[in-house]
Image (cartoon, rainbow, N blue to C red; front, side, top):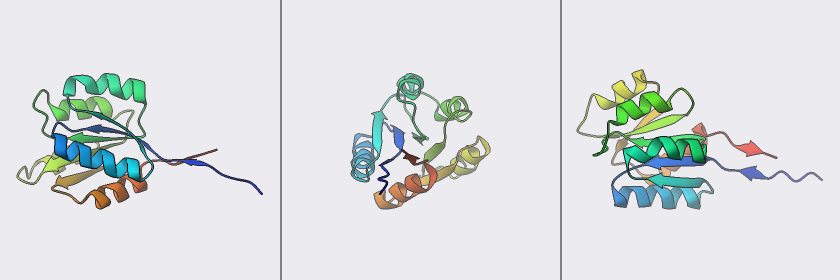
Length: 126
């Protein structure tokens, strides 16, 4: 008999709102993912290099930086899902044009976000 272990996704969460970030981290870790959470745009590049995520969940409205500039830097080497605000109707299309794998409008259900992560992020087997 061969036993196969699976490692769930490594997810980098970029979210400045403490309540939203905590909910995302809790749900994804509960689903078995390894999660790193950063709250500042200035820390995203270093976190992406050191953590090597399978997927990045990127808030579209960061108070200390332009999320769309971050998106341009992340997309060539990272799978990115942008979390957009419901009152910003242009953000989802702008994010898609910039190369996101998907967009999720806030407010969202944590279970739906976890399902999307499971669909998009690669699952490594040993």
